Length: 262
Image (cartoon, rainbow, N blue to C red; front, side, top):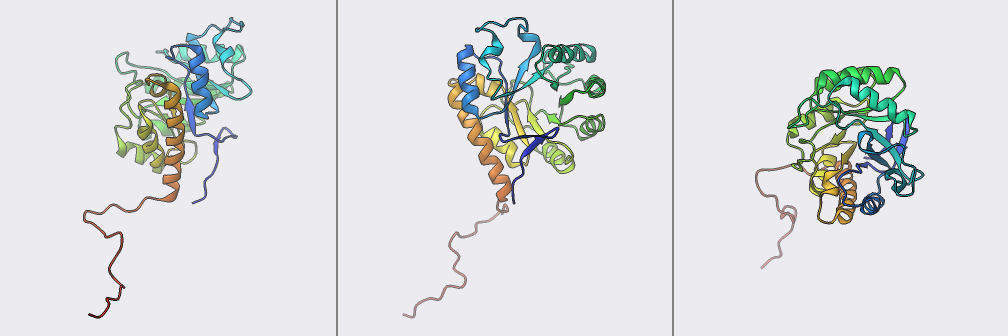
C-alpha cells in the first residue's frame, strides 16, 4: 500500500505527530523536545501564554515559527462562548487561523461538551477558522462536526493527561472505518511509545500528545521515541499485519519438503 501525505485543510504535513507545549520544566527543555520530535504542528494554549510579551524570553520566542506551524488551542474553556472568544484572540494576535477547539464539560474527566463543541465549531467555521475539534470517540458526534465544517476529527484515546492509551479499540476501529472525509487524529491519553504505535496501527492519520512527552523522566528521549513509534505504526498499518490464529503455524513448513531415503 502506497502512503499518502497528511493533509489538513489542503496543507501537507510530513510528520503525523502533533505535539503540545505545556508542562515542561523549562522552556529550553520544551524547545529541545519539539525539535527532536520531528513534528511540524505544535499546539499552544492561548489562555496560558502572555501574548503581549515580545521579549527573547517569551514563550513564543522558544518556538521556531519558520519550522513549526502553530496550532492554538482553547484549553480550559467550558462554554462555547469562551472558546470562540479565545479563538478570535489567537487570530487577532497573529498566531493562526488554525484552532484546536476544546470545550470541556466536566472538571474531573475533562471530557468534551459535545453540544457546546458543535455550536462553537459552526460559528468558527463561518468566521473562516480551520477547526480541529477535540471530541469523544463517538461516531455520531464526529459526523455532526464534519457536517459543520471541521477540518479534522480528534477523538480522545483516554482522558487528557491520563497516559492510559486507547481504551476503546472498538470505537476507534469504527471511527476509522466510517470517517474518510477528513483526517482522524487521536488526541489525549497517549502515555508512551506503544500507545502511539497502536493508534497508528489502527490506521489513524495522526496522533496528538503533550503529557506523554513532557511528563516523561527524559522528555527529549521520549519525544524521539514517540516520533519513531508514529512512523513504525504507520508503516505497520500500510504493510498489513498477518492474520491472528488460535493455533501455531510453523515458521518453516514441512509441506512440500522431500525426505531423504534412509
